[in-house]
Length: 96
Image 1 (cartoon, rainbow, N blue to C red):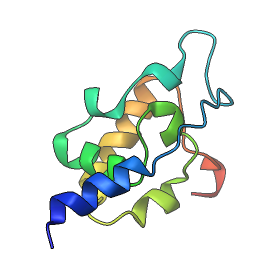
Image 2 (cartoon, rainbow, N blue to C red):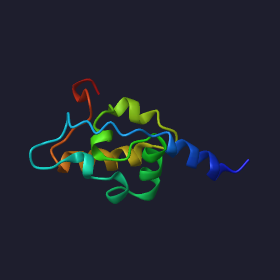
Image 3 (tube, one colour):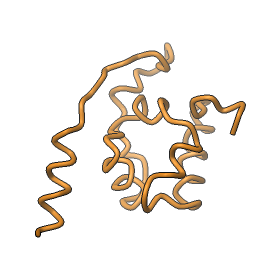
Image 4 (cartoon, rainbow, N blue to C red):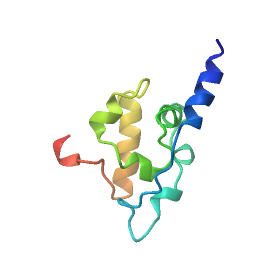
């Protein structure tokens, strides 16, 4: 079994919702791609869960992100730092 084939199949099942629920007036976060802002490891973990854009990322709580295989504390800090710098927060951030 080729592990790359499995990953390709997984990425093909990603469906973009194009939701702008969390977008701000300053920027359309559905056009900001995680692969352009995070390290390769963090990006690969997010992409493996069909989190392609910052808009997708904002649909997750920190608790949900912690459950992503391979996404450790360092990656989570990287994401938190990016969100903080852009005045964004995880979904349901009050309960984290």
